[in-house]
Each structure stands twice: as structure tokens, then as C-alpha cells.
Amino acid sequence: MPNFREMADVVRRANIYGPRDYRKIVEEAISFWKIETLEGLNEAGRKAQDKIMQIPKRLEKVAEYLERKTEKKSFSFELIYDRILVME
Image 1 (spheres, rainbow, N blue to C red):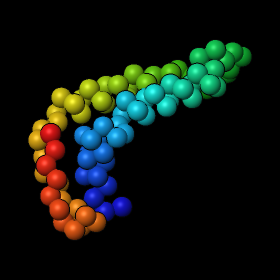
Image 2: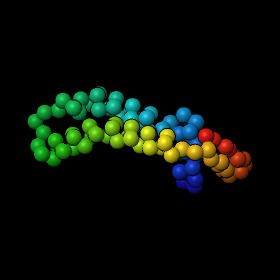
Image 3: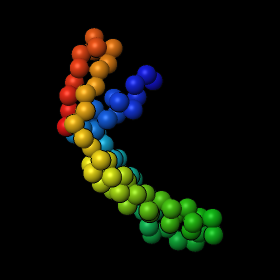
């Protein structure tokens, strides 16, 4: 998709959807599937369970990192007739 990274950055900056929203969705899925309480797993299953349980923490770190490095920036997209968007 042309300009995917830039469009994703605009969506995040506009508080439409970002890593914290994704974290909430992952947490809800983990809770719904009761991943944390699964028992009787073999070694591979336990490793997968541990890895899945770490995803929300990693997404929070990604959100914090993006917020720290965010600076005012201009964007221009052909799909909106090369209109320039300036976002903080």
C-alpha cells in the first residue's frame, strides 16, 4: 500500500488507532480465550503461552517509544489531492 507508514502515523497521531488500542484488543482476546489459565500444556505450549502473555507489555513499550519520539511533522498524500497535513 503506498504511503502505509505515513498513513499509519497520521492515524496514530489523530488518536484513531494505535498500539494502545491494539493492546486492548489483545488483552481482551487473551482474557476471552483464558490463555493465562490454560493447563496441561507441553513445553511448546507453555512457551507459546508465555510469549502471548508478554504481547500487551511489548505493545505498551511501543506506544511509549512512539510518543517519546513524535515530533511535529507534515504529511502529503495523493489520495487527498496532495493536501498537506501538519500534525503534532
